[in-house]
Each structure stands twice: as C-alpha cells, then as structure tokens.
Image (cartoon, rainbow, N blue to C red):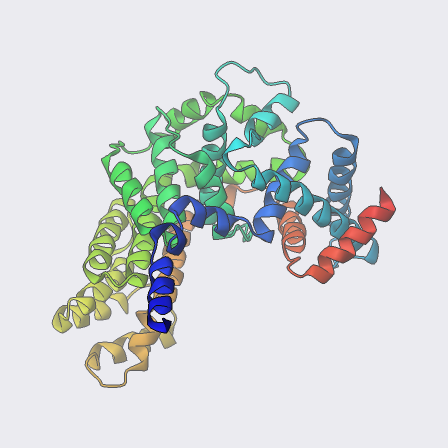
Length: 418
C-alpha cells in the first residue's frame, strides 16, 4: 500500500501541467515584483491617463523635489521633507503599478502616446499598445548604452516592456534593429535563451547601411509626435530624451547594441552550459566591434577569451599581448594581462577567473563602448548635466524602496496627506 501511494504521488508530481510553468507564467512571475510595480506606477503618474487630481499632486511633489535639488548645488542628500514626499510618491506608484501589472496583456496603458497627447501633438499614425511598449524598451536600451545617466533600469523592468511589446515591429530598419537588439539583451539577461535566439535571427537579418544622421532625424520625425515629446516633455523627462536622441549615440547604436546583444546572449548560453553557442556569439560580437571602429587592441581581449575557450593557448597569448597595448587599461591591468599570457595553463590561475569572468567581460565592454562615445564627442554636446544628475539621484531614491517597512512608512504618509 505504501509503495502504491508513493508511486501515485510521484506520478502526480510528474504531470506536466503541475510540474512545469509555461514561459508566459514564468515571465509574469518574474515581472510581478516591487521594482516593476514602482516603475510602471511612475509611468502612470507622469502621464496621468485619466487626469486624476491625486496623480497630478504626486507628480508635482516629485517635480518639486527635482526643482529644489537642482537649485541646491552643494548637498547630495535629501531633507526630511523631500524624503517624506518621495516616500509618499513611491507608495502611490507601487499601488498603481501593481494594479496595472496585474492586468497583464489586458493593460492598455500607452505611455509615449499619452505624453504626446498631453502636449497636443497630432494623433495620426497612433502607436498601438505593443508599439508603445516597444518604443519604451528601445529608449531604455539606448539609455543603458551610455554612461552619463546610471539609472537603475533593472532587467525585470525591461522584461515587462519586452513582454508587453509582443511581436511589435517597425517598418523603419533602424528603429527595428534597435528594438530587436533590446529584445535579445532583455531576454538573455533574464535567462530566456530561446526567446533571445529567436530575436537574434531577426536582428541579424536586418540590413542597415552606415547611419546617416540626417536620415535618422527624418526617421524619428516619422514616429508620431516623438520629437515634440523630446522638445517639450515635462521637466526631468525633457532632459532624458535628448540624451537618448543624441546624434553620436544614434550613429553608434546599430553596432553598439548588436555587440551588447551578442555578448548578453553568450552569457545566457554560458549559464545554460552551452559552450559552442557562447563562442559563436562572442565571434559575432568581435565582428561588430570591428564594424563599429573599435581599436584592435580593445577587441583583442575578446579574441583572447574566444581562443582560451577553444583551448588555443598560442592564440590566447598572442591576443592578450595585443590587449595589453590598449590605451583604456591601467598599468596594473597591463601587467596582469602579460602575466596571464605567460601562465595560461597554471593549475590555480586566479587571473583567468578574474579576467575571463562574465562580469569582467561586461565591464570591459562597457569601457570600450564608452570610449567610442567619447571619441564621437557624445559627452561634449550634452547639456543640463546638473539636472540629469539630480534626476538620477531622485529616481535612485524612488527605486531604492525594497522593504515592507519603507512601503508601510509611505502608506501611512499617503493616508495622512490625501
């Protein structure tokens, strides 16, 4: 009887409907988190789709903190009054976002379209819900490409946008390439390698000539009201959009985003234990680096990683010695790379673990892309740096709420003040 019972239990546990979640269920579980709730709630507050007075008041309180911190050039912290306002705003955003996320694909929130509408922009060619989320995702990925705004856009936030974007597609090749690359990066970072691969195929099939910035601006004008939003968007957002729409960033975006897409896909496959696919993706990434005009010495570090994974220690040593000539590294790193080149097969080589780890590869890539932006004068043409830093500081504070105690604190303030 005990054996029969045990077998019955094992049989029930092995049923697919009970033992495995569908991808859609997994994604929804991943995005049903506090950071996503606050992020979506902030979108609702800043766009205010129903023109609710309480949303206007919350938005004004955030704008007030932003304005005060912009005037205060010396203090890096917040006053008790500002912390109170931000705590209240965080609680409000969390409640709104949680409700919106729970709607799943039934949500009809269109953030970009609502901003456009609030500015009185023409509504011909309106974005669908999926396209609206696709544009938001593309902007988020472009923001992650640059280094001036270290905004904590988490992989869960991007997963929400990529999930809501569905099968959205743009007719304009540049916009479509940015979208596909963002989808690859997001799915890969969240360990959905199959979805990442599906979009990799689409991304690599897009043929794009060298970016003509004049043509790019014409392209942007075809996205309904987008430039109007960029020019006249409310306060903090108005400072962010020019960062994303910078000619230098847009010019480098196709190759830059494809590099990120391939390296993130490689990381996904590495976590899944598929070394051949890891090597393939890094080879693709190196090709894109050369296309982007990245110096051979900088690309050599990634060539060394590929050769090492293929157990070709002669080529690994050659590429490490080349990488040691890079102008982006300091003397200590240069010494480490040369030492590593001479000791690749050492039984206990901490330098291998240090320099060929996924984390270090990502850090190195970030430095390389940032240097290309510097070379193109990206940072020279940015304005409102103080305002951008203050906006980042406020956003970080809003997103730092990660305990129920803080949420309850915000709830009590919200109840008292409304």
